[in-house]
Image (cartoon, rainbow, N blue to C red; front, side, top):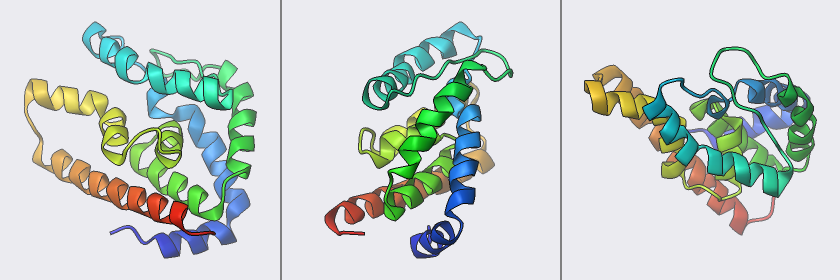
Length: 170
């Protein structure tokens, strides 16, 4: 179970650290590192590119992707836009974004979830796109499946927290 009250308290007490951490974390976002395997890359193009396009149109965040482990230098410039976005968030939204980002290894998918562009299930499926594909191909690993189920539950709780936060003032 996700302890959002404890997370809110921690984030309110360490806001500058959290903002810096997320701004650095976005450079290694899951959806920026694409496979060189054609079948997986096709899925990434179909599923991840629309999120990247939406971020570009909606928030002027234009991230470059890569097929290797080198960070695209162009993304460092976009980090300023990402950081500016983070500074506009309420404590509830920042808490939700932080919790979702750490669960999915993707601050960018967390933005889409916090802004209700993606449901928790959709964000989960995108965050674990390659892992779920490999599980279909090669069979399920019970430990990995259990971990994914826990993350999926956490994301659902975060989604409820976001929706409840939209009904109440901060």
